Length: 136
Image (cartoon, rainbow, N blue to C red):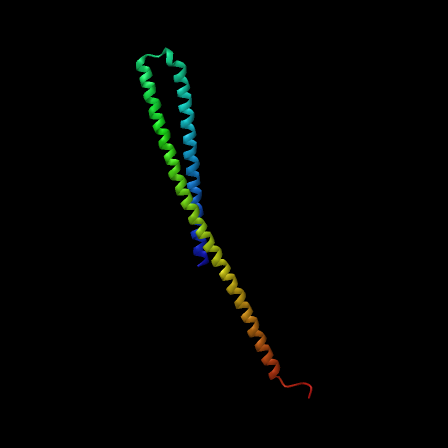
């Protein structure tokens, strides 16, 4: 039972690690998109006066698509954060269960050792009392 609980906890820890890496990856993507959007918007602001109307419309449309992509990436991060929280809760639950089982097994072993000691002492007392007295 303890081994099964350990495996379940380890499995949850691995899943948690994978989801954390995924969150980091998604946050990096967001930062890259934000940087790209900012750079493109700055270029657009600088070149706005020298561009044709068609270029302005095309650039504005591209910036809108980037803004939509940014919002989508933010939603993706929110979804991964929810998944991460669920994984963290599952790992915590399994961690507590594993520790509880380890503690239970330890208590049973202590109790078993104590019972063995009591039985051994009882048998020793009986053996001593059944021996003929050497004082006679």
